[in-house]
Length: 238
Image (cartoon, rainbow, N blue to C red; front, side, top):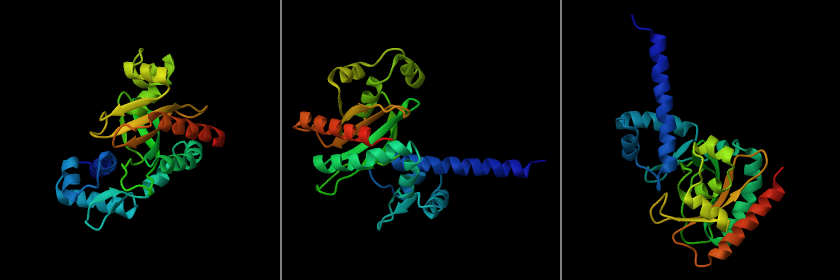
């Protein structure tokens, strides 16, 4: 005889798991997804994907544009502010100024286990094209300029705790020597990122970064602005 309560719990857990996976897929996507693409990513029939989508829409976790394509909604930004709220509050004005000064998308990442997670991001509106970087998007801490920047700031104990290794990668060692990291097409093809480490007492290891379509011609100027923004964050943090 089956336990209906157990079956209901299992079904509810599966629905929750798929809803969370849908948010991950949208965060990882380079552009809004169609319902067919979302269903394929989840490995479910379109009718099931619609049910998940409607539940997420009701809570404003996702929204659909005029063409019916799906992207993350404003509710995710509210949730992101709940992670390291003091750091988020201190960083947002500095990232905004950085993004508009350089005409590049600026963002703040923190380490979570062996991954780098985007905590806050600003896309400037004073340029014709920018690269989206959604809050919540994550990738391996061993790839990309933000990952290299964070790794370069870790102690031996933190290396083992976060990454499960004893030796720093070659990219992180180079970042430590230069004080900044540059990566090209490591996370997304055709995208370049520049990042510096940011450490604040009581907060997870972090990195401040910008993304662009190519390596900036004035790389020293970009690094200067990143460092200035980091100093602003340190002064504003409390």
